[in-house]
Length: 570
Ligand code: ATP
Ligand code: MG
Image 1 (cartoon, rainbow, N blue to C red):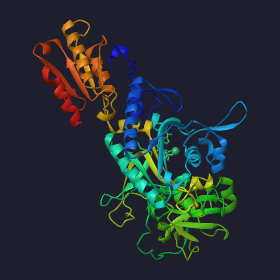
Image 2: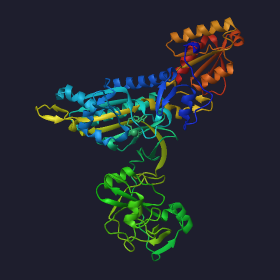
Image 3: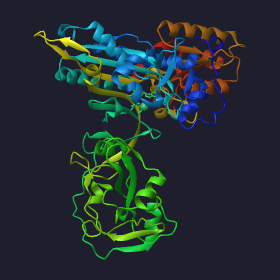
Image 4: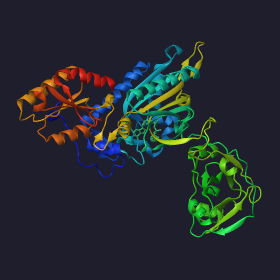
């Protein structure tokens, strides 16, 4: 390929709205163009990368025994009503009507459609197991599309679904996918980690996420350097403290804390540590009504864990708080409250004594608060917080550390969540009807391109992992339009390398060398060959790897072998 025939659209400046490096570089390198919030055109250069990612995924999925199909993006609402997700999915689900006023959705995921396919096609245990997957465009009306293609509204996903006669067979396939995903992300050249995950609204049990490790990642991952424990913070268990509660050392006191509504400010004002504070979070549960959740001052509520304890809930509104506690948020607490208000303490809080909490009076906090003396023992003690660095690992090994990741894949054991609701059954060996066990396996294909750049860049631009680079080699001739010898050598080299099956980009634009180098570096081509009149006379070419400090001279005659070796080493 020649740049003169290829739509390169690099930019000097990144758009102001781009927050993370991958988004900035993808726009500057001209891989994508924004059409609307979270909706992008993949330009020819970007599409080459996307297709390479796709090809690796497809190859490994096929090798693992899955079969590719392609389902529609537009799905009749009836299927979503059958599983109850028409009501449950919320505003992320783009709902549309056709000319006959019939409801449809633009598929954000395809459990319903695939289950409909399988219940129609598969009748007998003899046809199972089966694993069907697609690589297809999804739409989710994300509340905050950002980070370019990493959290888009329209994006490309690989979604696979497997169907089984037994849970044991589902577990086998789950293991097969766990291994397959490792192979995929290894081949893509990414630094990643499989982590235990929450199953979220999709339901079922057993789930792992695959995260590309990057500081800009939206997910927090807890892991133990001394063992193989790794879990999304959403899931990671915070163990109960093993140290006994401290005994009260003074009577309950009410202290003025004017204008101090944040735990850190209150602690500083009272000359104590934030770990001595208890904060109360007022929520309204669908069952159980107004509830106070107690957390240590420096801890954060984990909404997923809390939902497992109290069921669906929302945060209480200010007027509900005033009605229940007679006080505005900022100074609320669990002491002397209506006996009808449910109080749930995090495990860490249950182990605290002599703590500080809001006094349910604006501008005041209680100090030296003790359960059993100043207020009843909490009705329930549960793990409702996020783990923090230094917490003990749930497997009993070392202290936990935290890192950030971009979720690029997710595997679930769905069990019978969808097959039951949609009557997806088979006849077993005894002619008895049984519900199929189901697994689902997603990969964010377009998100991977952003995530790969988050891990591979420098101040000159993208450094694509060799497996997904848009071109493997750039040929940059010095004076292509002035010097026939250089032109001839460059044209010949292009043909030679392309005939080896390599993706080569010859920069035949009539530009300054500096700006050609800058473009080839910005777009992340891993290998560069420079052809100049002087070196050519000496029978040499100049080679530079994208990560190399300096260029080296290589004999022009050896270029094929040299490049082959470089590509194999990558
Ligand atoms: P997230 O928590 O990031 O929103 P999810 O749990 O909603 O992801 P899944 O429903 O498991 O995601 O979708 C499968 C994969 O699709 C994810 O692992 C992720 O890589 C990708 N994905 C999900 N939402 C988006 C999005 N808005 N833009 C790009 N890729 C996405
Ligand atoms: Mg999501």
